[in-house]
Amino acid sequence: MVTIIDYGVGNINAFLNIYKQLNIPATTAKTVENLDQATKLILPGVGHFDYAMQRFNDSGMAAKVNDLVVNQKLPVVGVCVGMQMMAKGSDEGSLPGLGWIDAYVHKFDASQVSAKLPLPHMGWNDIKIVKDTPLLRDLESDPRYYFLHSYYFKCNNENDSIAETNYGINFTSAVNHNNIFGAQFHPEKSHHFGIQLLKNFAEKC
Image (cartoon, rainbow, N blue to C red; front, side):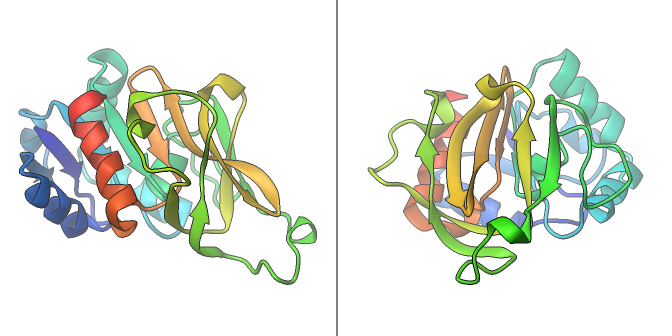
């Protein structure tokens, strides 16, 4: 069962609608008990890093989710701030991240982003697949996704980076470390490209 962690942050219904369209069973979790049937997890996120981390920590689900991911090795995909939460921390806040991936989240340097590339990075952009993983298989050529962020994910181990995007600089736009996946972009807002990625997560990861 694909289970979307509903801690009050993220586009929950958009994920549910896509999986309904794909005829893939999916549900949400608002309590620890709701996680009992989960076989795969989606950690959504939008907005400020510390706000999302605090909401997640206050949800009562954080310890259980950590156990499922770290100890029981359930596949998980973090989306947007949900991916950033998987790092050790962020320039955007003071709270520690989940630390599931050896990485840190940095603010885009405005001096490296030209006047034609305003912050936040918002809208459609290409991703370049740099490592073969089940999450990014069977995509159409030149896959494009919808982004909305001013901070980027920097892996300390480059092998964890599976896709890159250019916005003034090349930055990691998707990650994978063992059972842990992340997408800086919003697959739930990215039409057929996003639908294929979410299908891959449900069926191949």
